[in-house]
Length: 532
Image (cartoon, rainbow, N blue to C red; front, side, top):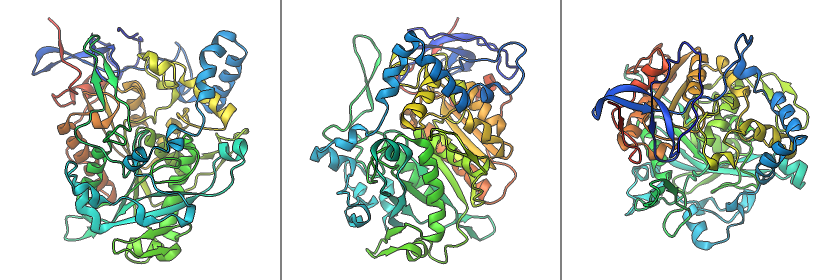
């Protein structure tokens, strides 16, 4: 299938030079640049590109001003009055409400694979939660198992979100749970160690303790069409595919000296709750978790030795000393987790707005000075204005495709839910202290220009890493996953240690040069296209 290619007039975006087909998860012909690779001197390296462009003579910040929550709500109201638009989008909007499939999955094997626990709120048995040591056994053999002796099982309290309160009359607090892995400190190069925390928010399919059997594959290739087919999980051996890759990231960060907190968002995995959809609320959850680790408010922890503590005692035990000052914090998001992390950064540094309530009201930023930056992998920070010109039929039928802006406005109005970000996160980036971005060239989250736009707006330390692959990090070639880990660690070390530069960056000045920074390795379902 051939995708549409939009014209662009951005001096940082040289004209596209070729087209090439990619495999998972686009199965489309995309625009690209001609660059020398091991396959040939004129290899077409493809990418997704932004569909929307400012009209000639436009004044203002197009990708911010035209894709705000207020504008998207207005467009949704116009769509409801237009039968063709209403018929096309209404089902998408009305279908996107809690709970998700996992909430009602009572299959015992599925629950075991996903790591589910018997939910009893604050009385839930923390000892029933799967620990890193579990993954030492064959066939998993995961390096995270070596961190078991430094791992606390932690539980945080969080309020009901607007959909739950306004549509389901649910008002009770819920519990968010995960692993807190205490690090040894980052080497400062002077014989000292600096403690710092990285808080990880997972993607749509990520579950902290899920079983991920290495014999299973995320997708298969249809022998008749040659197109990729996403495999269904849970199956007999895997709860959610890809989590082992993220536990390797946890292990790498921990070995580099960082404290690591990996938790399941509300409504999934080992956490409680009814809804897992509202990423704005999940951003609030992140800020509350960071504060709770200092104060102990709503906190419960199971130590490696089996001791359970609560409140300030729990915060002190996790920190290994007085927790009040807190550690420097970086927010690491993957896919959907980048939405939550971007919202948290925006609420903390720019403004704190109620986009999930009937009336949007904005307050001053939270202003937590211990938060130092964001690590965004397979990211959505550029917002609704940078939806790719190249979308699939599946995308167009469930929200992330061509009607993403209408979908955003629709679920805000109809469900009091924020899922995909508007332009608000993009607008707030200039106030973020630092940021790291990593993405596949043919990622569906945004056109490549969108990630460049986000990157350009960062005024502090920053880096952008691209790979020849699709949206999901776990599908990237293993050597590229390793490179991304090394780059995010270099960024995090530079931020924590107050360095002015990030060592080892691959430099670029325009989009073609950025594409040229990719390593000469491809996600396996995409084969190089060489032009004569």
